[in-house]
Length: 255
Image (cartoon, rainbow, N blue to C red; front, top):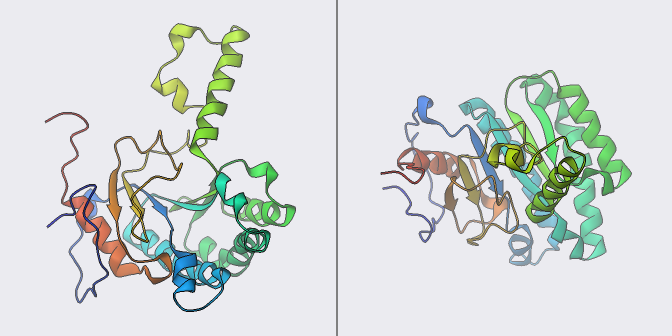
C-alpha cells in the first residue's frame, strides 16, 4: 500500500526482491533532505562528524542508483543557511565534505555522464569548497545524464526574498511591468529556474517538515518520510520511495 501523506512513517525493512518500478512513471526530479547524521553518530557514541562522513558514502550509493534507474534530477540538501549556527568544528568539517566527495568521486561522475550543479548563496562558501565545486561543475557541464544538484548554503526564504528584490529592481528600471509579474516570472528568478520542479521529496530521520527547503518548488511534490537516519538509508529504501510515489495519484487540485 502507498504511504499516506503526511502522517505515515516508514521503518527500514529489507527488500528481498525488486519492487517492479514502472520506468514510464518515475519521478523526474527527486529532492532529499539528508537528515539524522548527528543522531546516528550519537547513538553509537561517536562524534557528530562521524555521521556526516558516513552519510557521504550513502550519497554515492544513491547517486549511482538514481543515475541507473533514470531519474533526471537529484537535489540534495547538503548545507542550509541555518547550519552556520552549528559548532565551528562541525561547520568546518561540513565545508570540507564537498571537497573530499568530489576529489574521490568526480571521475565516476564523469564516467556516469552526471552533471553537477548547485543552488544557494555560493559566494560566501570557503574558497576550498568553491574551488572543488566549480571544478566539478566545469568538468561535467557537457554531460547530459543525471543532474546532481547540491543545495549548498541554501535557504528558501532568502531565495524568494532575493527573487522579489530582483523583480522590484526590474519594475523600477522599467524592464518589467507590474502586470507582467506571475508565477512563471517569479520562478525564473529562483536558483532552480533551469530545473523542473521536484516530483518527490524524501526526508530521513523521522522529521516531517521542510526546514526552509524549496518552499516554492515543492508546492505539488509528493512527500515521503522514513524514520531511518541518513547513514542507514540505502538503495532498497530509495526504491521503496519511488515505488510508493508511483502508487499515488497526483491531482494538482483537481479530481
